[in-house]
Image (cartoon, rainbow, N blue to C red; front, side, top):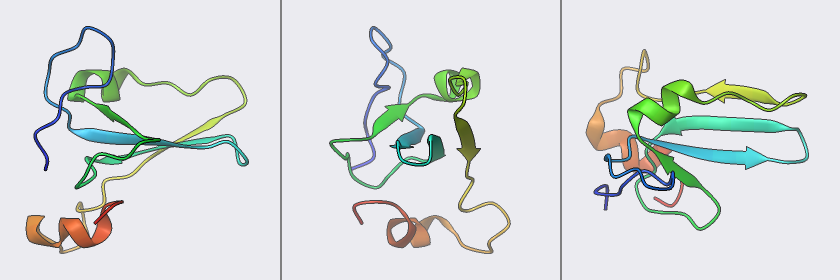
Length: 83
């Protein structure tokens, strides 16, 4: 189900992106909203995703899975975590 709200406290905007962490590589990965909610991921609205910055020593990877791939929205569940 894709009708989720932003994980930021007090934010009630709809989630548009999912944020995951890779602690071993000091990396944040921000991608399209995962098809299902994941326990160790954070869903963010457009505003919070746009303002997201990596902490010192970490790398932020922004993925737009569908952009430039030739895939459409119905292909999304196959690419998203938890599909």
